[in-house]
Image (cartoon, rainbow, N blue to C red; front, top):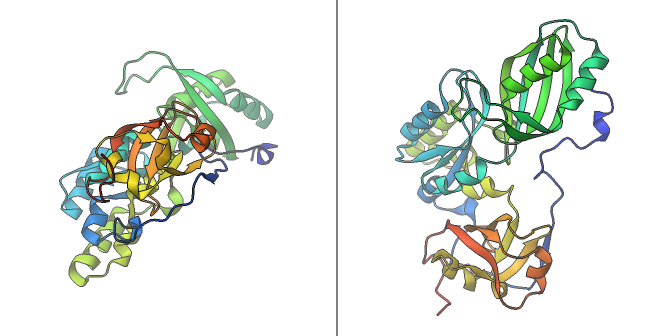
Length: 336
């Protein structure tokens, strides 16, 4: 069974919208400073890398991250949202300096595919009707075995698609806000149907900008690293490890002049004259990512103005810098 009428509606996470950059001023970047992320020297590329890992069933997320560190000989790595041991799928792992972007992945939207097993017989129309009632804002109390305090929390379910059905087994695709418990969602759907239900299997197919289509395995990582270390072949490792900038592609984007970069790297806020391009739709309070004209991540910040105000302002602070991602001195000092 597939949900009737769903094809006509948008079935995507909030950040998967049409996005457009608008130019405020013409500017060029000096090739002597910085480097396009995909062209970084291999050692630096790894230190500022993120892996879209396909977690296997069995180990904990913490164990998987420990294996990644061991394979690459790194001291620091972090993941973008815990998966239970039995759950498979997308587990972004940020390496060394890229761990600074983990905070942006944790609250990012998620997508799952799960098998919900019904405890009684339900006709297709009733199943479709009840599933629709769980789209939108729902209230959830975390299950007994959870890492957070068990109080009722509102969570957004962006879509639930019924992919197919085999008797009492229903294959669902669910797009939801981070922190939504799919096991509890299946239980609650079963209660609403009046027959009961439980989650039989679960796989995460998206975390923010990372999806299962280009996820890699631990074996892929191990092989690619050995190819580079023993034979100097970089291409497989550059495919398995991606620049940390790809882990920020779900955030609204602002591009700045070379002359503004070093001040931001020293913690300065972004002023209007430093902006070259801005993404449409930015509003005050939005978390935004600041990039160089070469595509390098400079910092994360909170917008103090709308995108239209940024385009027309000649002065004033446009972004309050919250987390610097680039090392000072990468671009020449052009301030104070």
